[in-house]
Image (tube, rainbow, N blue to C red; front, side):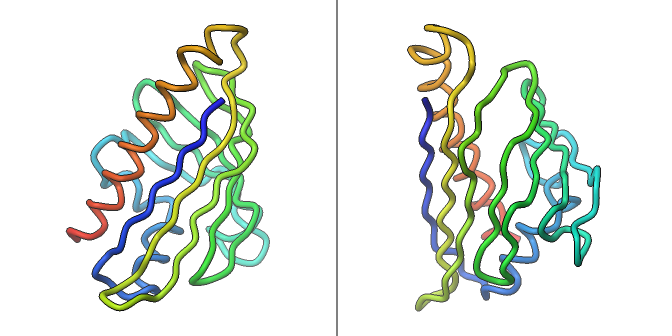
Length: 145
């Protein structure tokens, strides 16, 4: 099981932060992301609800479906496919709120790695730690733009 929770305040307006997080192509410019592409557009807009995005993080690759798209406050996703580790992804959610000093971003990802014993005892905690570092790094990079 992994349960990743990261919060940051970014010194940018909420619309700017949301656009960066929603734009699949923008992810390729961040350290730690080797590639990003849109596999299927969303129902009402390209990166909106229903969109299927592919993210290449080097050692791990994901196909994630946008399940909620509420501009500029919320973006939820579910990992539908992953390699080389098989995931059971319960929820991924990025919520934004306007606060003094900018935008508060809360990023949550919860699920498990489907490898008996090894996934629960070793890979889940490792993925949780690396996920916190990765999400935190991405948010710091957005703040520095």
